[in-house]
Amino acid sequence: MSGTKPSERADALVLSAVERRYREGAGELAVLRGVDLRLAPGELVALVAPSGAGKSTLLHIAALLERPDSGRVEVAGVDTTGLGDSARTDLRRGAIGMVYQFHHLLPDFTALENVSMPLRLAGVSKREAERAANELLDELGVAPRASHRPGELSGGERQRVAIARAVANRPALLLADEPTGNLDPGTAEHVFSAFVRLARFTGLAALVATHNHELADRMDRRVTLVDGRCEQV
Ligand code: ADP
Image (cartoon, rainbow, N blue to C red; front, top):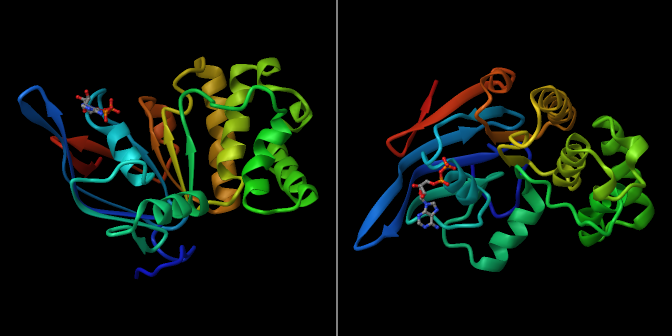
């Protein structure tokens, strides 16, 4: 099922025969060599593979930040093959949320403003954007820190705010690259629990690259990259 508008009922992500090569000196490095991966709506999938296996490359392609050399990428039922840059950007803004190892919050804005910003950019009123942002901060257990700027928050609090911001416009798909990789184990565990609860609450699908096997076990299933292909583990 694929159309031109994102649909919550369609698979959140479909990668079919995705290939990506990088130029390396005189030769080429084939990082992705025919990746097939499908995330049903609401499914939480851990991507666990050694450093250099191609996790970030796969996430960038799924996030429509990079194009594959060949293969097909579908997000929320929209086939991106042949879409121009502005249509890809619109689809990314409407259907995809991203969380990185480092929070990338805007330092001069409060937690509440950081989370409500994507909604304001999408045309939501200030009042409604702040109501929705407060609800997300509450769900992630950081509502009491809403009026603080990132510099006044702990690492774990910042990551919770970054997660709230990533899901503010209710994406069908959340992509996360080592979201707790920069936190101590106890904080990582708390942030991850809050993330899984929020994902269940909002019904979004997520693909999360992580080295943490305990956290990966909390997802619905786990995949890895072997020789540039995605395998179920
Ligand atoms: P991971 O996230 O699993 O650590 P990456 O996707 O970052 O893996 O990288 C996979 C391989 O591709 C690595 O060998 C890396 O050096 C190489 N690579 C990644 N991005 C580029 C790029 N823009 N140009 C050239 N090589 C790259």
